[in-house]
View: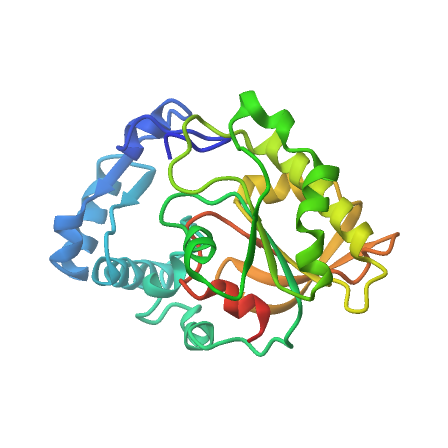
Length: 284
């Protein structure tokens, strides 16, 4: 997180990190309390509220502690409206103990019924992300570097040049991935400029591939901020839901006044998704 392109963090204690953004009094229910069960967590929450805390952070580390938080949230939600925020990758474990989401958790753990499709993957992976795993180990991918993520060398990410490099694999009908880096980058990456460059690269690739026998009609863009900037370069004015792939990363249909209309898109945040996420997107 110290190298996050938009919101870098230099303090691991979220209470201190958020104190620079708000005057709201923030409390903490730490891991040791959550490990003691939902009763201890409920008592700790009551004590924090009584002492004037308006927001509370729950420090989870595993399914057990997330389940405790799920029980706590569910019990409080029965009493009054409740606002809760968390990572898009965290809801299933947190809500196992009866929260409304629980009805769909079991479906999320099954492979979605997506029709198989040729895919183009663009990845700005972070360490331990599924995208990095796929690039290194998955034999069905045809990998190509999209260029450096280092800002000082960003000009090397030339859309026309990169599209020519990976065009042969697309023309051969292979699923293809373009990536910016593997492992921890040498310097912070900036999601806006990198995302804009990748968006231009997508446009160039789709234009070159449009008249092929089997053009690419499904694209996965990895990196939350990166994908949000990239999609703005495509002239897409709306996305509509098609199917759940995994929590936080649905398959969507693009609507545009161009040949991109109907293109299928998945926008994946960093460190979200299981190790076989790419296979889920392929529908295979």
